[in-house]
Image (cartoon, rainbow, N blue to C red):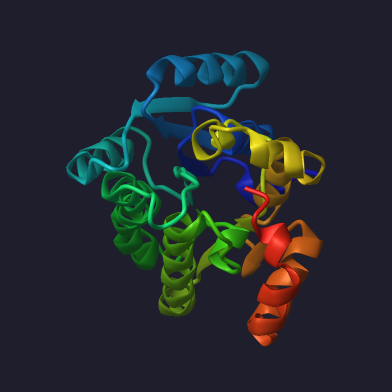
Amino acid sequence: MFNERLKGKTVVITGASGGLGEQIAFAAAKNGANVVLLARNLEKLETIKKTIETTSSIKCIIEKLDVSVVEDIPSVFKKIYDEVGPIDVLINNAGYGIFDEAHEATLKDIQGMFNVNVIGLIACTKEVLTFMRNRQSGHIINIASQAGKLATPKSSAYAATKHAVIGFSNSLRMELAPYNVFVTTVNPGPIATGFFDIADKSGSYIKNIERYMLNPEKLADIIVQSIFTKRREINLPRWMNAGSILYSLFPRLVEKVGGKAFYKK
């Protein structure tokens, strides 16, 4: 399926050096968009850029950016506006998690997750808001998590960051509706990427949920097909999202019944 709405548009992706961000870059380029890839690892970005430019006529720009260093964000986005032009789509994909029980989690790790997952995301979003409002066109896609809807043990800090992303996105969606700027929140369950190399150092969680993991390439295609539509959320897998909905209605019941399953991490 080809998203005609993307042809010739400029899509900026944070955390684009691997995993879901890399697959979104490939999918967006395949659908005719020019892509701007932001991440800390320039070497990995160079490899992705080479792949995109040798398999298509798409323009691929790469810039080094650690979104937790918020003072660097304005200059990087200014460079994009100066060299590429208007940003049509911003995909806030940069993020990470560390699975620890609250009493074990260090403040350094908690602050690090908030700096990347929340503050960095908001800082990048602020760089496009005025332009998109003035043009009355654009789409902001924030990669959150099912953890932002249904928190489980050993993910209190990570879940808190994703709760924040969902809350920010919901408010932003209403603010931007009069300006024809769309906001979509992506709430995936576990994805088969390098995320768990950091989040689950023991490897026990991966063993427990491996067969339920989402394919990042398929998820990226779904995300790209949603660009420039009014889709409010993308929630996958469906059975996990059903659990989130059930939890919002019957939290005590879900916590009681799902107790042992929640400790799979």
